[in-house]
Amino acid sequence: MKPAAAPSPWRDPVVLLAVPALLYLVLLYALPLLWLLAKSFVGADGLTLRPYVDFFADPFNWRVVWNTLGIALWVTLVCLVIGYPAAFALARAGAALQIAMLVAIILPLSVGVVVKSFAWQIVLRRDGVISQFLVGIGLWDEPQRLLFTETGLVLGAANIFLPFMILPIYSVVKLIDPRLLEAGATLGAAPLYRFVKIMLPLTLPGVVSGIAFVFSMSVSMYVIPSLLIGDRFQTLSTLTGRSFLFMRNEQLGSTTAVILLALAIGVVVGSSWLARRLGSSA
Amino acid sequence: MTPIERAARALMWAAALFTVVFLMTPLVVTVAVSFGSSSVFTLPPPDWSLRWYERLANTRGLWPALLTSLQVAAFSTAVAMVLGTLCAIALVRGRFPGREAIATFLISPLMLPGLVVGIAMLQGFKAAGLREAYSSLLVAHVVITLPYIVRTVLAALSLFDFSLIDAARTLGCSYPTAILRVLVPALGPAFLTSGMFAFLASMDNYPISIFFTDAWTKTLPIQMLQYVEENPDPTIAAISTGLVLLAILALVVGDRLVGLRKLADF
Image (cartoon, rainbow over all chains, first blue to last red; front, side):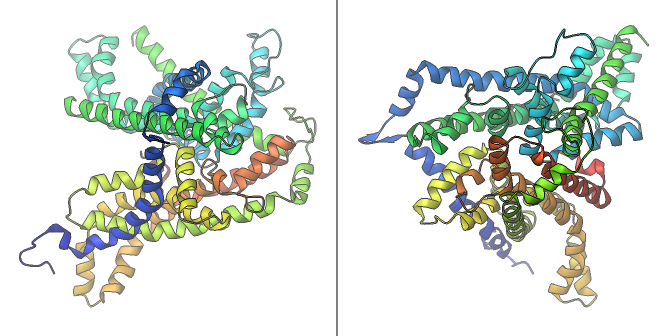
């Protein structure tokens, strides 16, 4: 089938099969994104950084950026603290618990974000299950409303993104040979030392990709803050949505959209660079 | 076992238990509320009732939105399936440079903020003269579903032994028959699971769809959110319960086809 001397790999007719999908994405997705990006640097008289200068001149907008990053950091931290040990449990659990955990992790992934955010509106109410539980165990003296607070937003978002922290860490933990730890023990390493010197470096690539997933999704989440905290608390994403959908301020919307895009690309590129570095040194 | 090891072990199992309870809470709460009689989401419900399902049946905006969402999801998944599979074959079989970059590009709509992609597409479509809501939704949702198909089919194809097709041809099959009887069955599970998750992703999408809806054409998540904001009552819990059932169905099918552990591969 193959030509005796292939002059160029592009002559291979199988390349043509990639054309429809690529053409579709380039025309309908990549070009519009590049156009959005380019347009934000073009003013009435040529190239300009004016929209960005104006944006960062306003202290309110700094607050918005700070809100976005702050919430994303908290959500990522909560997911990491719960997800890291949970990923180990998932890898080590017996059959029954493992199935329960897998169902609990995968099932919510196939339920929509609108459904889960709506559920959290109910969970975070003054008479919701969290408030009832905390009063029940005596941690709170009286029921409190968590809905429309930053804490409530972090809890809801962490709940929705937790699977994206557990699964990447689980995928590296399940590959670790348990005999490595035994070897460490035989050689006299204390448990904490074994964890820091053996376990932590081996799981780091999974941790990095989990953090990247959760952080970038938290930065760009839109439905969750709309339902759980409302207009009082603006993030880059909600501000972008509002500028286009309600305020009809396309200028502001494009500026925040490009900042959001830059943040997201930064996280993806940065994390894959870090993962490669960790992978080559491990 | 030293105390530190015991503490670590306890922490691990506590995290496992917490994870199961924490992740299942929103789903359980939704289902419980939908079968309760209380209109203010009292839990546990004072009494069981089907009144929210009755109201759901009589809620006018939601059913056309569900229909729109089902159509858009089915159409975009089908188109993405064809485009994605062809492209995956090219990436696995071809020997041209930049294949990894192309794969990353095809999956990138999953990694970028949906809202930004939606805005860019809105402006791009407008410039191209496409203004009609329904066709814009169909076109835009292919970009949402394509990454799911490419990711899974690419993984399945790279495990497929293409010499099997040559073997089938040696045994007298024509080329199309060989593809149909050897390649397609081998990719069957990948098609079904990726198609299912692509379909669910399209059904669930809010941040891109919001830019392509008008007064007549709304997808289900858009209509649901609007309903929640206008009259927050457990009717939404009733339709959510339906969507949870759909997700359970998808999970059962996925488990039968490829197994739960395989679904958790990342």
